[in-house]
Image 1: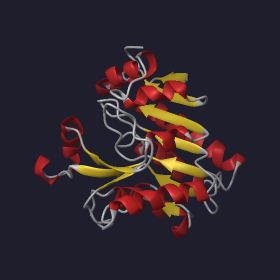
Image 2: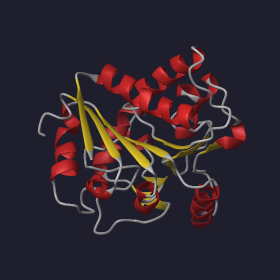
Image 3: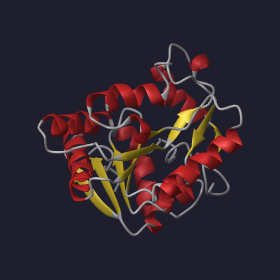
Image 4: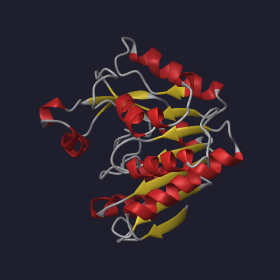
Length: 241
């Protein structure tokens, strides 16, 4: 794992955007795995700037999102579909049919998960996967567990995750308790992974992910086994390394 420690959130966002932009320039039909939440927002802003400057083109890019809340329609402002449209997709020239986000309203969740996996395989797998990290070490919505879940699946969200995500909702009662998440095996099959971390509250998770034992109790620790991971952490997130 290559560790880049940067000064602050802005520098983390710029560096992450430059890595994604390089991928797009070198392979204009790349398959990119995307994350949501506060952490990658700055990266998306930087990518929009690069697009507006004519430096990158999304015309042939395919994207697959890590996760989506279960039971939230995509029109809901808290859905990850809505988040992606607002923070990236409606500002660039990506084709609608090349955007893939799990359907949180699917009647048959098992079938939805199987088909999502199939679509990733049909696209040739993920070239570059962007990840954030939860305070409990989760990646995607792969929560601490006794085993690693290989493929896309329905997850019961941890109390810690629900609490952390409640800041986006009017109350903690509104936060969905389940989500569809890409599995660990699918994430690990990405050719390259960029892990982003910002802020003091992520420091312990980053320490365990980078220096701790590899265990499903800290899902991000599995990234130690991947041949091409770049961690970009600001000084606060990297303070325990």
